[in-house]
Length: 263
Image 1 (spheres, rainbow, N blue to C red):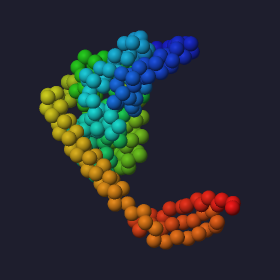
Image 2 (tube, helix red, strand yellow):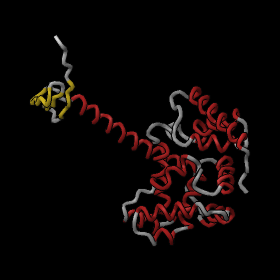
Image 3 (cartoon, rainbow, N blue to C red):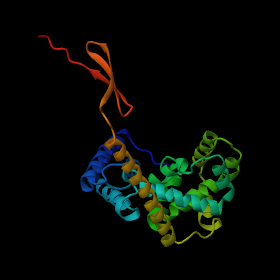
Image 4 (spheres, rainbow, N blue to C red):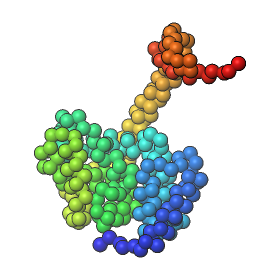
């Protein structure tokens, strides 16, 4: 049964959550606050104190995951989604093929699972069991849980032929995973062997390298576009005494608000 808390307790927890997140931002200024941290910290605060919760966040971002996992681009988490796609193709090829045929990116469904450790995806008691396993076994279990959740509802997924329908059925189905033992049996027994963590880590680093290359290329193109921006005016239209539109050689049109000084 999910824990019950008084209003005073919850107010104190919110205050502690703010303190923990501020402390983490001061501790890791390069990373700061990012998506999913509030979910991780707020859940931890229900069972441990603020200081231990702070170190829990440190462990999540500096031990369990690569430093790129929670960066501005969520590159590490995105790399894990590419690894998950490979594993889905091996373990549940029908689901993989169905999603591909509909041009549905699996990451739109599973990215938040990985970032927030399935917070707000599964029932609370199921979540706690999954967290226990994660803290004991490490990030590799995230792949097992994600595959098990998808595999349990293969028939429902295959029966839908649109993106919104598939996302809705998965979201609704995983919220009803109260049979934790059944989920764990599928994830660790019936699913069979997965590549070792070293192999998974190697795949993740490879995808991370490809993603970083893509991001760097995008930034270079953006910089090139800015450097080639020609702001010379080729046309000018006065709308009224304090407003004009100017056409630039680069193809942009800008509005100019003119200041009219009285002599």
